[in-house]
Amino acid sequence: MNNYKGCNYCLHYRRDGTCVAFDPGFIPITIASGQTKHIQPLPNQGNTIVYEPAGKSIFSRLDEYWMNNKLMRERIEVIEGDITQQQVDAIVNAANESLMAGGGVCGAIHRAAGLGLEEECLQLKVCTEGDAKITKGYNLPAKWVIHTVGPVWEGGRYEEHKVLAQCYRNCFALVEQYKIKTVAFPSISTGAYGFPVEKAAKIAVAETRRFLERNTSVEKIMFVCYEKQT
Image 1 (cartoon, rainbow, N blue to C red):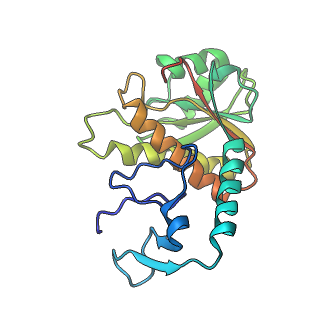
Image 2 (cartoon, rainbow, N blue to C red):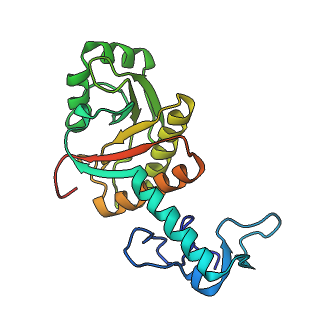
Image 3 (tube, rainbow, N blue to C red):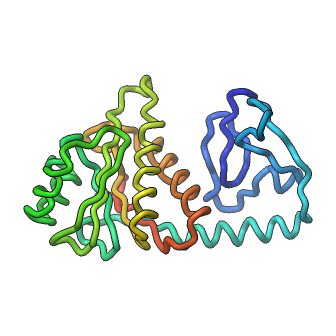
């Protein structure tokens, strides 16, 4: 149990830590069993997984679960399209460490935003893997551009999944700081950086659900995929 990788959202148990909270018809094991599983250990518990009896009936727990999942779906959207054209408060740039124009999403955002974006990025100097920085949107429909540097996939040997999760967390920290209501993400690290799309998608959805559960002021988080496969 020390290697437990349960889901913070539907509280199920899966050895690989994946989340199926969006699967139609899925009911978390904690609802059926009437127990609450504490994913993060309680004080002084070390790595022990602690169980507590559920305080509500199975019917009220089911109603609450499906309602929360419905609301979550309404605040998350996945589309195929061009991120530079999205009418949102902020878009996220899958940047490189120099924050200069590159290929893929990064190059497209810089071209659409204009030279003002490049000049501001020069002032920011660099951005390390997993970090995030914010600039104005300039010629983009979005007011802000949040730049984050995803990990280069090296077979998972260097905990790339943790770095990618940190990208999302740092982006969401800026979303809160700047009181952004709507934000569009690209598929971070899955292009030239080679991060497997399925693994990246699970991380993206997991971090987004965690953020939206504690932040009720954000109205919409979009994932804008450049092609249908992604």
